[in-house]
Length: 239
Ligand code: MN
Image (cartoon, rainbow, N blue to C red):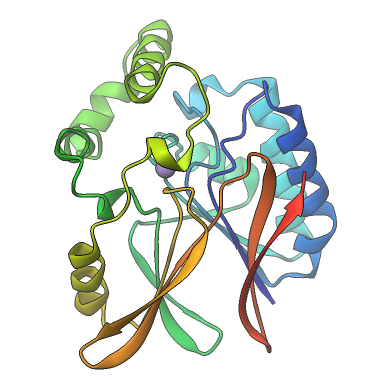
């Protein structure tokens, strides 16, 4: 059994979400061969060298799961794209690049965070290109911590003043971008998060049925997609 989650936006200010996640790790996730976390796992990440005790406790909980035999894969989101190798070592997880194609439930599946599919937001796409450039990342990582905190705050404020992102605040994916990306990777299943609009969308790709599964965010409830002998199924659960 495989589990996929995304957009937990973990932060100290939401102990209900962290508690639910720790419970998830100790119960359901121990039954899984692999756990995929498709981005925006943390609400904010300014660098592995600035881990808070809260963030460290999450890393330790992941490590426990990975030591017990569940493989953990982590993909960057637009909030935690600064997560690096040091965190992954500590947490016992493997960093997955965005996009990645993996074999799940007997088929090739494309995994993405999803922000790169929201091409309508031209300003964000431009910022994203800059932020994901290795040279920019090098500069960002070497800025003083106070400057990084200030920048992170600014980035968050730009989207919406310190409130949690509702689906209506987030630009949705561009359908043509979805088809093109799926065709490029030769897949008929895409799984992503980011938009906070959990759903399964059916589409046609080169005359064949295809699907786009959108993972839910953890806010008023938690979401997990489970892949097992019964297929792909996502369900919410109370926090
Ligand atoms: Mn996101």
